[in-house]
Length: 390
Ligand code: FEO
Image (cartoon, rainbow, N blue to C red):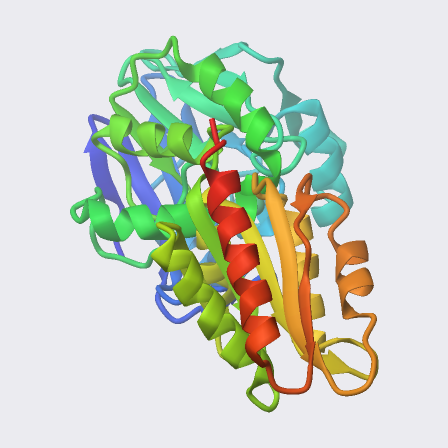
């Protein structure tokens, strides 16, 4: 796509990656993604804000073909989907400086071998004049690496946020046109990338409160011309109080755990709890991550494989532990043939979850009357616990 004007002398550049289906060799991208860069032309200097993933560098260089001079390349974040084309941009513009936090400078030298003399480091709150346009740099650490910052374009009231508020969404729409669709993509993005840093994000949001933002321009997904939409969503996602929601990631080999989960889901629903059930043999882990944003309770369902939990369950437990959702309660249900240490092993996989462990329900073979009664007891306990949420 060609550059697109956002404001006078401010342009979107970058690449829409329609076909990418996996990020970090981990995160599913059902809707592709984009790598947004932005060009700000002041009366004296020109700045490029972020670049693109190296596999799209040709797109960016082509968009820059009529730009005679770039004085600054602002690197909000050192991850290569934004920084990976900086070396090629620096090669084209021999006098350009990379504007970054000291931490980002260090990381970009490590990751991309950019020479130290090509950097201009900036402090939190520092401004950089482009003539009739002024860039103000605001440190926003841990969204989602330690070096991250955002840029406030004072005259045009645009906040360039890189990953912060981003969404993995390939679209030709420059601005959000379908809020429901972007909400899902942005929540998925938050869940997979930002959720572990919930409390730091709270501080970053507070810090940005004083800015009268007209546009939020992230480096993934469309631009927010109604910033309150994404700011309100983030406030909700990072809030301390989980919702009356239970998430049940499970897997079943011969139907016993499946039957238990079905019974439990029904028992919880009868008691007014919203439940999301995910079969780990087929589920999109992004959907699971989204559900974890609001959940008060996580109940893991597993059969026993060689005494321990099923490997897919181990994977999901490790993932949940890494994402650190705000759930307050957890339990385990499942089955075994002769003996099981699945409960102890799963409990050992989730040390970062600050949850109260509710009494698990493990059954020998196919579930029977006493097992269903135990599942009813668990459902009742979850429902009661959820009444205490505040
Ligand atoms: Fe879009 Fe953390 O990179």
